[in-house]
Every structure is written in structure tokens, then in C-alpha cells.
Length: 333
Image (tube, helix red, strand yellow):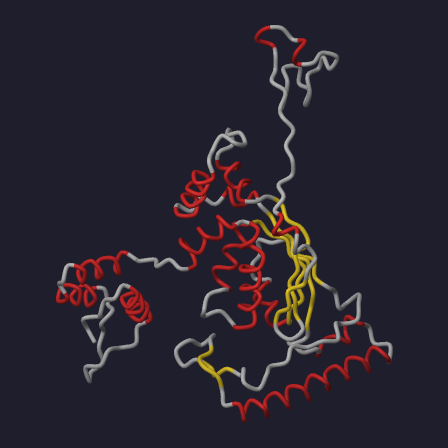
């Protein structure tokens, strides 16, 4: 802090301790704090968790724990002055009411090995500190993600960027064989360019998106939970979802178990309602399906074609899914 004489830091009269200063001038000496340690996390430091066929996630370092979140939120409290159940209640309150700053006080650093197509989605989360393996300075990693014959997915007919179900295995065998041939050819072309003296920055341009890359990825807990909320979702691409599940269940759940519980309760498995949805559900709960139907019509959810069939509406589809969660039936079907 800044003192009256304009200097920063300790008492200008450093020859006197706090106990030497009489009366109101005495200053309390801050107690020494130790670095938070989570034994369950220390036990997995550096341990690679396998993902896909040749990928991994491993924990390199971490800062903070559940108590650090509480301490950040309740800056004036001293260790031991609150009970565990009160700390749990505070963390759940923070999560429930979107008070995010205390969660930003915890950080984690991971080493990941991931296919480039999944990494393109991963790097969209711009709230992390990243240092990626450079194929301009080093030879590209000689590994590419291969798809098992029973895991080729169909293009979704209702979501342009999603998939739905799998293709037949016999067709998948042909696709996997062609994939292997393509990957081997692309690698051979790349290595021939390197051997011919082509610059690495140019030789790499025809490498496939299935090629693995590696990176150090450091992020605070608040933004990590946002990443996991999106990438653990059942609609996320399967490859990046596999990484998110490992990070969440094998690392974050052990690091901050109380925060993780609150995250699952209030974010991942919660049901968010819009004003329109709340009104319609309220009408159905009051056993007034006609009013619910009128509300849906009023808000444009039940527009119809000339033949009387309902025009596809994503908002209505999402509402119907929420109604099923609550054990309610949509009154327009």
C-alpha cells in the first residue's frame, strides 16, 4: 500500500517491529499463508488420461481449491471461522446467482494432445493462455486420429452443424479403410517434402485436420466451467466432448468437488426457462391447456402451413423437450 510519505511497502522505520510501536500505532502482523494443496489432484499430476485413439490430457499445475473460492468471496474471513457446510452454501449461492469473480481466482494448466479439427473448436475459447506445438519450427507429430468403423456418424437433418446416429458398420469399414489410405498418403507427401529440403512452414500445408497437435492450456475456473458447459453438452461434437468429459470428471471433480457439484446442479443439469416458456408451463401446471395453447399461438410458436401442419420451430421443439422433463404434455400435439 502507499504510505503518507509516498513510498510503497513496509513501515519506513523498519528497525521497529509492530510490537515496539505503542498504542494505536501498533500494527497487526499478517499470518503466513500456505499454498492450497489438493491431495487427490497432486496424485494425478503429470498423469496422462487417454482420449480417442492417440490423444491425452494431463494436469501440469493448479492454483487454488474450493476454499480459495470461498476466501475470494469472503475476503475478510479467516481460516477456520466458517464451517464446511457454510462454505458449500456460499459456493452454491455464487454459482446459482452467477457471481463469477471468485471462481476466477483458481487456475489450472493442462497439457493436451488433440486432433486439429477438434482443436479448432477448442481454441475458440479465447479466455485461456495457450502455447501450441509449432509445425513451422518442428516436424509435425506423426499421428492422426482414426475413426473406428462403427463410429461414423450421420449428418443431422435438423441441425446443420450436428450429427445424429451412426452409419452401418459395413459402410464404416470402407470409410475407415479410405481414411487410413488418405492419411498415409498425406504423411508420405509431407515427409518427402521435408526430405527434399522444403521449408517446414510450407511442407505442412497439405497435412490433414486429423493430424494431432499438442498445447499447454491454462485457464481460470470460471472460464473452464463455461468451456465444459458447452463441450460436455450432448450436442457437442463427439471428439471434443470426449476431452471435456475427461477434464471435468477426472480432473475438475477432484480439484474442486464442491464447485463441481454446484456446477452440475445449477449449470450442466439445470433447466433454463424463458419468460414465454415460464408462462406456458405455468398455464399447464394450472391445468389450463387452452390458455397454454393460446399463449404459444400468441408468441408465434404454432404457425401453420396451408395444410394445417405446424411449421418447424426450434424454440417450440426446445420447449417440448422441457415439458417432457417436467412430466407435462404439449397441448398442441
